[in-house]
Image (cartoon, rainbow, N blue to C red; front, side, top):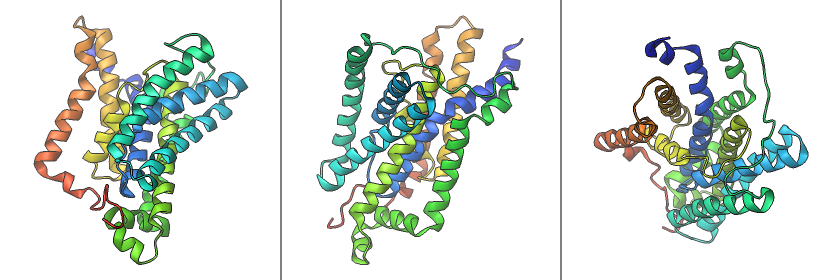
Length: 303
């Protein structure tokens, strides 16, 4: 089969959709957090923490559902921790995010060795076996993680645009002082929004771990940072961020295909998603799209 046929095959499409789930979950987490006014660069750490928690829970319980719930819950808890540090503790959001990322990178390796005697990977788990024997595209589109992530993106977009809670989130992100003046509890709203964003990111981390049927040290591989770039490129829109994640995921899938079809060094193709991220951010910066960021991002009610 020619390289062109492989690139435009159903397998490539299915792989792109599957690989987009961790990106999209993290991007949705970033949108929810930052639309409420809390800068969140901790997405990488949340992906790692939830991935390990989901695998450990499934390994201990034998239930994929338990593993998924624990993974999502862990994401929500880490998101809540970030929000508490930033909103209540008034810790700089960048410092808090970096601390969480570093703690997750080192902490997951420590826990791997403590739990399983290895600092590189966990034992294999079943993950979610779904639609075996079905057409690869149908199986991928109906995969529980793909369906739940798509529903989460749709519901988040509707909630932000058409519900009272969404109005409060947007108000806190645009002008927290004005929101507080009209009776909105800015602290509570931000805590809830960032926690929900953490849960969405936890869903992405769980999907990543279950897809590989184990946890591997550093397995997030920069996806949290690429998802953050998708948030910026999209203008902080859930649907646009998801589309951007599909593009980044297609490049991720493409670099895997190219590694198997050519003799060029694998490292040359591995940087494709990161190069695309830098190019996208450069274009956004030149066109001034970054001006669409919530006006109150990083600000507290009293300034």
